[in-house]
Length: 297
Image (cartoon, rainbow, N blue to C red; front, side, top):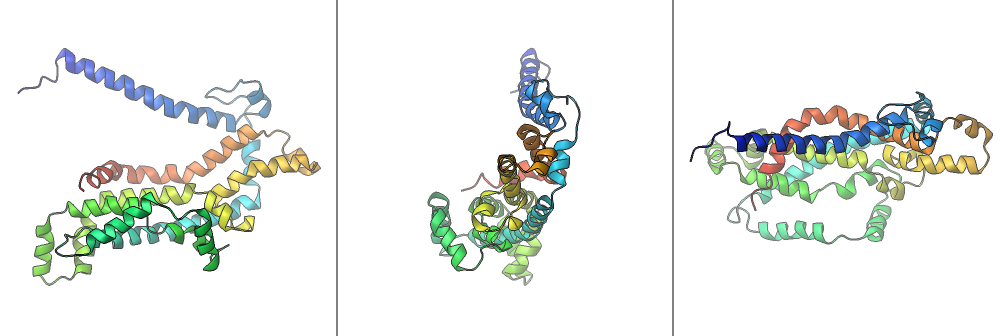
């Protein structure tokens, strides 16, 4: 059956697609532009509702207040350490779990039991208090490991990578086995080089998860110097309100041109910068890795 790409129906379909995609894009971009404009606008302009996608009464006071704070830089260092240690460790554990589970039951008879065990953890969680007690009893409170180890085996990422491994032709493994390669060599020299799209996908999931996580920093850290960046930003407005409530004159003078709205906007864009720098390099693998890793059972 022939398909005419220049037919009126095809042209109408393309026009409708472009319009819908453009509207979806605008619905995502316009709010971000509005927040960015608010972060560079004065509090009086925001209160007067004069800010659209362009700043009104341009000012850097919100960024000045957020950045000129040692707590911000301490929390940024904690987040960087968390990403540098946590992401490679999480990807490594994902590989070590996904590779054996990708084998057939004849090669790995206990496969179905382990798959069932991991899937159960996705459906049934231990709860906040049991998890906290485990972290506390193992001495991880107020350490970087309390932010990394509780989620070091992401089951969803394991499933994506496992299904991608299962899609690789078995003849490649058979050929490597005939050449004398063991399972570790097959994994590192055959499977992983062919799995760049899925590896990029699970790496991106891990990076975003570690960078955006804030709740674990609050519950596993007794001192704010151990907060990751997102936990610090979450408490920043609360501490600002508390400073005004306690009549701290210096704080009041520092915050004279800053409102909660433009300060929140500044926080959002400061925290988005690292992800915006990394995402373009992983985006080309993202769709391929997510699709190919989810089509097999």
